[in-house]
Image (cartoon, rainbow, N blue to C red; front, side, top):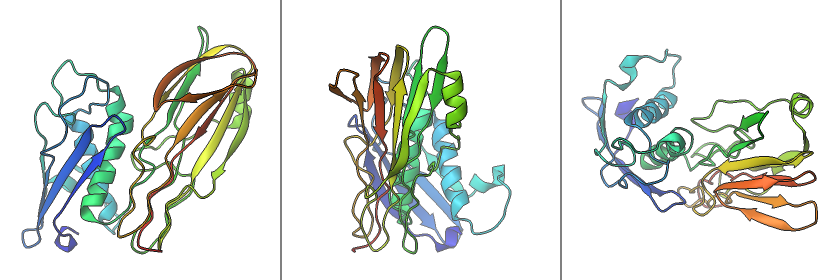
Length: 280
């Protein structure tokens, strides 16, 4: 597979302004590749830093998906691939940097940056839309699907867990039985995928109404910087979220946010679409 790839570079900005930058150099004769993340932002004061192991896992995932054969995931997969990750960067932070969002959010950015540098796939939704709520007795956590990016021969997929996410949602009947909430909507967000010769996948709209007071949080990305298109394709739609209060007021939620909700309030999360490929 490595002998079919070409050199490339890509820089992808997060909503907080930090950047993941990668340059890929391929030696087709030796069938090796060098992934150099020089130029990536220094470690940040928030928890969007990612340990080097996360960057390695993202690289392994990307190169494994490019192998068109049924091989087992194994240590040999990365032997021909050299990773260069600057010390003190947000992809190799120094203790005691916070790293919780690195696993769920920055990992997605690394994957998309690698696909972008290789020129094989537009940006996916680029976030896991980590949504949590609870009180002193009950806590709940879910990730919410979105659109995947298009490629040179295929459209993106609607309403799918992308790349580094592999979790499934709790069935609505189970969720509503165990928690004082109602799933009032869960639908495809039509038109949120980027336009192009091959269009990006659409995101989703998810609405959760609360029957008791709770604390809710959102940890996400792609609320300011959209999922990128490639080869002339349009970017996917930005994600967004809001609280609809029982009294009729609407409160916008930031990409990372914490809100207190009361009985009768509802949270609506609209996830990003994937980027398109090629001019329409």
